[in-house]
Image 1 (tube, rainbow, N blue to C red):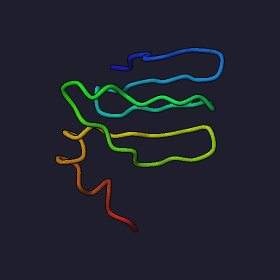
Image 2: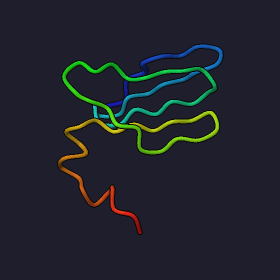
Image 3: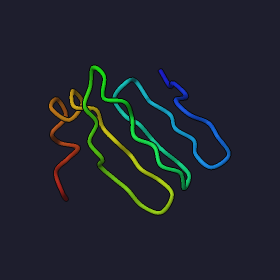
Image 4: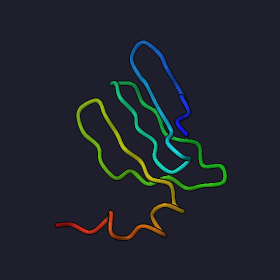
Length: 66
């Protein structure tokens, strides 16, 4: 399921399956730390990808450098 967390002129944030948060745009946004902790995984010019703690613990293959 994809949930639109924020949509404004300078930022768009989608949370996918309550595991991945994708921010596009120059404005600041951090996912809320409610039931889940978020860790920034990829970040660059006007984008940021964060993974929820549960996803990180259960998917170690995604975090290995190749």
